[in-house]
Length: 211
Length: 211
DNA sequence: GAGTGTGAAGCAGTTCACAGCG
DNA sequence: CGCTGTGAACTGCTTCACACTC
Image (tube, rainbow over all chains, first blue to last red; front, side, top):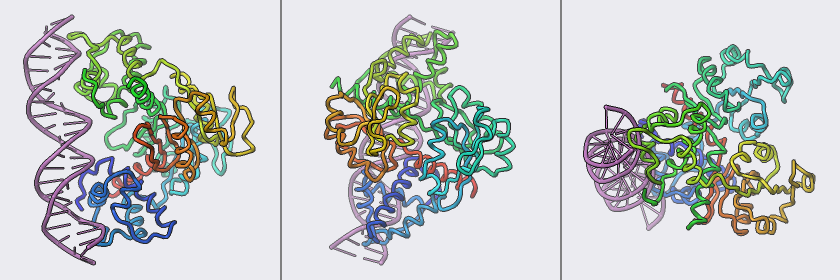
């Protein structure tokens, strides 16, 4: 029930619970126990209850949680079910794959602006948006009321671009460049690194083979 | 120096340190302190030393670490600097973006086989590999001596495909499908979810706005 | 009775602080 | 003297256990 600092791991699990609730709803289940959610997510019932208890009391003792009601609560907690205005920087292969990734839009993340520094690409249309040059970045980020930026640029320029983005007042960034970035405290920055995950698997494989 | 269970967070940081060492090497630095590595990675010097101490004593007191020697050690620990045989399942937008992602190959991850269930795509060539139908999966995974599988299939079929992959004897899987998968204990399974990260940012944004 | 909500206990990862070595 | 390597202290997430409620 308290509103203190919530563990990052808890927030990630809330996203998972929300997905599972969708599955339960699709199969016509109306009520779900912490045990059932834990089962689906590979965690424990106590963990599920503790995660939820950070935000309130959503269950009925002896019964469990209403699938629909809990999903609504989670969407509210996670800030979903509203519209987030997203800018994509970098229209390379990764960037365009993200741009065309359906689930984003379905969850309320709408890529309204795309930037690239390749003169070949600038001015081209992609779906209903036009690719803009990097020189327009600062101005368009401010004017376009962008909530969130997805960085899909080469590692070498990622920090510089991030600095520009932060200077333009954006406070949430998802980074796909394979490099460690620094941002001020008030900016929410998360990185997705395919390379890092592969290297962790390589580590696991090495240990399997030598064991 | 011990060889116990290593925290996942440590393994991820080792990957980062390796990158930083590459940067230091490129700028001609020969020796680096735990302090310098920590600075670059946004962590603490004690953390760096503790991470490394799980695997051995690589530094010289009063001096620091040899950039080249430490990089070699880390590559060895992470199982890099050898060739990993990778199969990609799913030749959609995400799959193909991964296929064409240069850094993978540069780090020793070589995608030698691609599968897709779309008859349109089966038989087509992508670079030097041909796309195979899913019915060849089991046989080719075994024959091809595949070390690692990248899953880039729709969420709805991901668990079924994973089960097939595990049954074919593969013990390391990187999942890009936005769903929670279950695998036996002995299989190293990691998931990359763009949606999950975006939702975590959405949570952060909501709190920023309401604070 | 079944299953939630939660303080207390347990545990794992991080930080501290300092002895020890180059 | 500088910087590593590491037990010890600490912090914070997870698990336990049970009072409580529907």
